[in-house]
Image 1 (cartoon, rainbow, N blue to C red):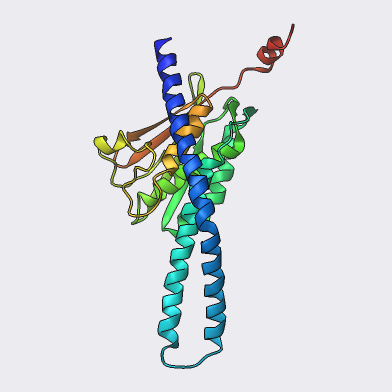
Image 2 (image 1 turned 180 degrees about the horizontal axis):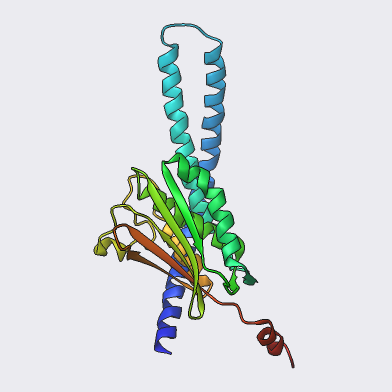
Amino acid sequence: MVSGLSRAQSLALSNERLAAIGKMAAHVTHEIRNPLSAMGLNIEMLEEELGQSDGAQRSEVKNLLTAIQREVQRLEHLSEEYLRVARLPQPRMEAEDVAAVVSEVVVFARPEIELAGCTVALTVDPSLPSALFDEAQLRQALLNLLRNAREAMPGGGCIDVRVAAEGMSVVIDVADRGGGIPEPIRARVFDPFFSTKGEGTGLGLAITRHIVESHGGSVTCEPREGGGTRFRIALPIAPSKHVLQAAHVP
């Protein structure tokens, strides 16, 4: 009972924090998206004009425009990430095949992972039970973890993904072979705005935790044996059909 109460309080606090961040993010993003769109349009027009002109400075001007366009795209990416917080709805829980969803996400993310010089290996234990989750939100959480693992290995390496049943949960492990995370930092990786990277919002792992805990599950960060870091998502197993039917009998 004490454990359940503590978990409920932690989830409520997390919800309040992300709700406040979401309101702020929605307002700020609304204010900057129009100027960013105008800047992007003007850059395109300047590039068209530049393509029709001659001169020794043409190459230098084109490089400057490319740099400006890159920064505009970075700001657009950041604004979209903030909007994801503002748009997070309550999960629509359904009994689904976790392995199928994880496999689809791995296939989707593999080109991006391989472009960064990394690989991904998926292991699925046989005879997995169904779990309760919102498919769209679980996809988002998994993509966050896969990208985090990829960024932990700038020199390349393998991301190991495993799906298995443990007790009353279906567990998804996403493990990298990077340099690992020191304990003081591991304790804060799920905090909003906390990041060890030079870029980004520091919201990816906070969103992941919010999604998983809203599902009645848990997500942890732990050192991986042999080096690196393992993130572990545990989702509740779906009740069997006869249990669900009994619950609806008057």
